[in-house]
Amino acid sequence: WILGLALGPQSQINYRTVLRAMFEFAVREEIIPVNPVDHTPKPKLRRKKTRILKPEKVARLLSHCPDDLLPAVVLVVFGGARNSEVCRLDWKDINLMKSTYEITADKAKCAVHARISELPKNAIAWLQPLAKNRGPIAPFVSGDMFNAALQKLRKDAGWKAGDWPRNALRATCISAHVSSNQNVGKTALWAGTSEAVIHRNYREVLAKDDGNSHFDVFPAAKSEGAKVVGMESA
Image (cartoon, rainbow, N blue to C red):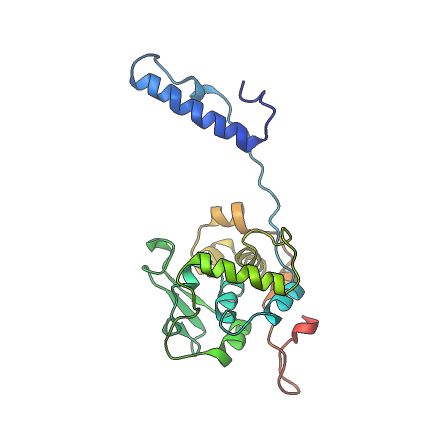
């Protein structure tokens, strides 16, 4: 009956979950001896292709980013932080000398995601001109406020409604980090997640050179000979 429903796999799984709960109640009440749903096949849910941003689109987004929002965006798109985490970060959590930032247990999604992560050179280049000794990274008290600011930024940068990939900044960063380092386990520790979650939610398979290109998006050069990639040609 479940597999015969004219619905997608996720809806079939939802029906199966409700039926299983109902029959589980019947087992507890000794109305039936076993739960029949346990012996039925579970519909297979195929993962959708992860959509990420190419370096030139990351550069375009950053070129429209106001200074008060820029540090938070940089930490997500180049540092692999979560939106909810950057809303809690303080400048004292960032060590530009050591090229690291720290997510303490009280600022992480959950305690096991606490970490000290390396920041790539391009993230340091974006952050340095705006750095402070202390104070919030971003003027947002919640993830909802940050998401609203990101929505306005996308509009200002030319994205139309519906064109923005889900969780694009973090997914782009994690995909690039995996391809650049060729090590999913290393990326999982760096981004405060698990290998399984990376494969399920974040990873788009990229060539190593494409991953490296993401971390070559630097602010526009201020002087001749600087080893930076201008946003126009990123």
